[in-house]
Length: 333
Ligand code: WQD
Image 1 (cartoon, protein in one colour):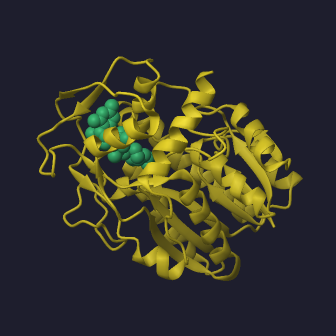
Image 2: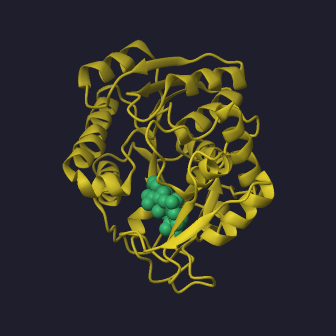
Image 3: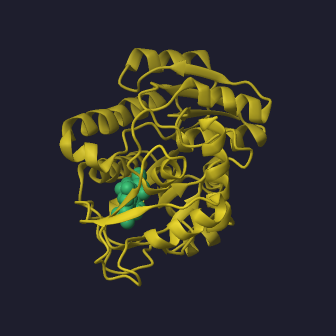
């Protein structure tokens, strides 16, 4: 089965390509390389020993995207492509709506034109905003507090409306919690073009002395140690969750929504302690004020994915930090 992976050169996209190729799928990658490098795809090929097609095409380029569908026999799509920084979305909302929403509309219209109606969509726990109850279930109200999260809600709603208009669609929406870690080989991991704002890549760079310390955004949250709690899920567990979703859309029509998390919450101080243990490095830090838009606690209810996708996250925080550290040391050499 040939699968189009939009944003396939990105952090989650590239790891999912590894699992798809290892499972025998044929892969076609479309990426505009705005926040990724072709090098990641070379690494995917090295790890899997399999080649696949790559097109440097922006989803906003309708002709270019139609050309990709024309040249291939795409049967399903895994849609990762999109801007994903909360902070940037607050500063430049229209660029987020244009890139994420208009790009998705062009993708869906192109899929219809070529009669491709199977899709796994990369959504985010950010759609829940400030949760009233944790763990967060898929039935929790959607209350995004930033333009990035709102683009994800809009695209989810578009997909539900597509199915309401045409029951031939097979749609799985995956809401990620905090993707972290790297491939166990140490040859593939998060490698953004811009300075990282997320905790794990930042801690890694402190451990490598690229930054002198970590600023912990707030130690006055209503949590066990005052720092923010999140559900950190290993990128490999996350990638395998996409294959389970693909299996579902291969055989069933409809719209299904799943949280992809571990169901466990770790504080910033927990992560620092585990990373120090895994890397053998001290992580200097300083408490500072809360980051606008941050929430105190966020972790997933994972029953639905376990029951309906037969999927659970297996890797613990120790292997997350060990795999992340191996990758960071490798690319810094
Ligand atoms: C985690 C914790 C921070 C950096 C973001 C996006 C979300 C999703 C995942 C796309 C928080 C603290 C962080 C630092 C810190 N991405 N922190 N110092 O904010 O939970 O989620 O990435 O879908 O949409 O919002 O992840 O890694 O930025 O923060 O203290 O230098 O670490 O306050 O408690 P977040 P994060």
